[in-house]
Length: 325
Image (cartoon, rainbow, N blue to C red):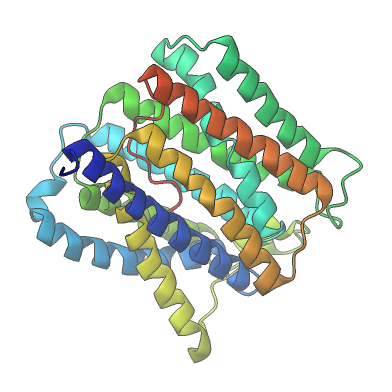
């Protein structure tokens, strides 16, 4: 018996999300690798300039430039800005935090989506999902507890991936509320164009590095240091960042366009062990017991929320996300 269209679409969507999550992990690893010598806005500009070119090529095969027309340009702008802020705060966290820990803290986003859906969408969240949210937030508290050794990382820096998760959640809920519908490649182009605009503004204001002078926070230095012309041996890294940016944006959008949102979103959690793996192999980061315990609580709570949403057939995360293109 041939599989139903829904089953086939979900299978394709799972392949897209797995590919997207894997490429996200490589993207994050490369940005952390380059964070000691380049400003974030320079990396964002280069990767987005390359990424938008790749996205436009994909767009051509999905229907052409006409697919960029939208009746809700304001919605796409707000959505894109939220993704930009989520990216900036998450990447700033990577400059000072272990890759696996930053990724784990970011995964409170599904819990924030559930919470924001109460006032914004008027959703009713029952005791089961509310309990899961509290357990996930307990995981955050475990990782941030005063006794946990973060190797001198400022405690405020630990809030950066949580802030990124909140902005991402706001984008998800806003998109679902307003019902934006676009081709995956068109959404990727909107995002890349916004990244380019924001990074150019950063360059105009802070590209000479004057605001980084005397700053002690590594995350702020990463945001504000002067642009540096990369040596030849780093060119391939910037090129790969650009290609990954486009591929990730397309893969995640396509996954959520053709698949069941709750099913697809649960597979994003494969990014946690992959991030921990890259942190161990590339940076020698070995997570402590409290970090592993907090990660398990966050992942377990998020997966339970998705399971409940699928069971109720009313997934809160039915938007089409661009998590960290």
